[in-house]
Image (cartoon, rainbow, N blue to C red; front, top):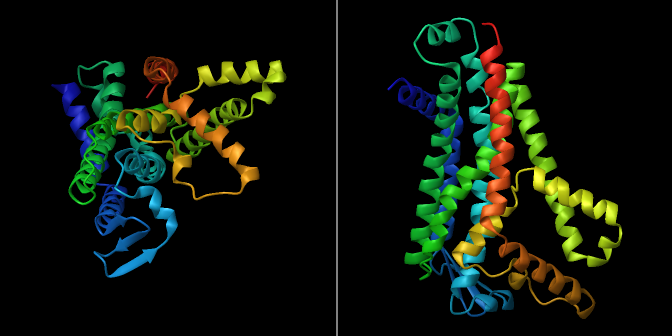
Length: 309
């Protein structure tokens, strides 16, 4: 009961913050914008036909092909709104949980109760996960219904984006939680977690370039170093590829307008590399990322348990 009470308390604390409502408003605005759009061969209708944009670019979406609608939903909506903006705002909203927990008075009351420090830490940690879970459920279900009702594309696999988004947040939040315990500063926790997120994405981006440009693999030292680094760090970018795979999405290059012949080969290689990344093994990418997260959490719990308060 005490562990559950900690989760509820952390969840309520996150809802009380203004960022919760900022995220909710952003999600509603994106949902409303999607609902006002409809695609036709060679054009797009905005505000239910009040404004029509005629362009061959949208011919690719004629017939509302499910795979391309899934590409728009995953790469253009889910990945940006919750995958980047949402996770960044969630990190800001939850970064102060552990520093505020360690303040004199608050920590004294909690430590006086018959609950281990490890359970206390995990209760706060899981409460932060519940904050993101609520937003993920609301946004993914909202956009799922809009795509089905308004665009005629029902994508059951898209609903699997909910646990994937929570996973993405957890990959970053473990750094924030450790920093909050180690430095007792929300500002440091935000800066360190966002900085590490950029590093994770950069390491994956470099690895992707080796796949897009095979000739780079001739530098065996750099290539092998990128493989090791990619295995160690959380696979934050793989979340989008897994969501696309399970939603039945096409590759993002299929939505790019016609390009000149000289650039087409590079686009084809990029599309092939994206297909290969979408075929990745979820056990490998999620499992190796969770190993990193568990190690960081273990260090945070160890530090939390050894500190004098």
